[in-house]
Picture 1 (cartoon, rainbow, N blue to C red):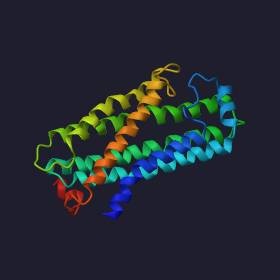
Picture 2 (cartoon, rainbow, N blue to C red):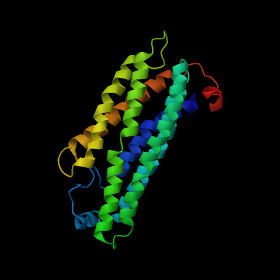
Picture 3 (cartoon, rainbow, N blue to C red):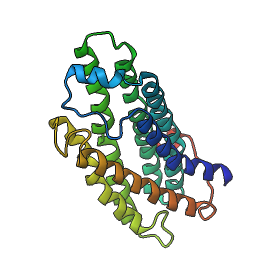
Picture 4 (tube, one colour):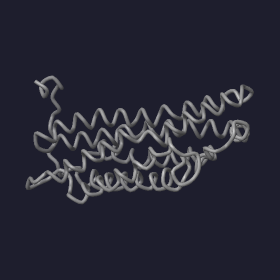
Length: 236
């Protein structure tokens, strides 16, 4: 139980580390998408080592989310048969989500690595990094929708997750999807540093993390531990 509790706390701790990394890299909010190539070079040239360290924290924060996402799958496994299938789906979603947190900062590291190169090259690397980090929301959104529907359809006497958590997932999903609209805009609320695509989507992820943390912690000791079989025995 102690180990599972530690894994659950990896969710908010990982998010906190990501926020610290964003602040250290002077990226809260991210640099405006409307910046020119030379302006973006100037951004990465200001305290470059601090920015590199901040981007490293972004990667570590994303990696620390893995046990948290795995705990969601583990607790799903304690439910009915349909929950067991959902548990395996959650494993794949969790893996993809962790990768999406870890990879984008490396493009930002590359942008800050050789500041003497062509400004257009720095701009391109920066664009890829921030578009990935803010705009790659499909995995997270689909995960929340499926999880929310699964929770609401659970009519057992002892459901794994409460109904209110299902509604929380379904509300947070479309709000988080706003981040994906940053691919269309360089200015305004839908740009990657805008109010809707960044701040509102970030708040939605924070609410989801807190809600999932509360319920996962509550479930520890209440759900009966079961052994996880090999995947082939379930898919057979």
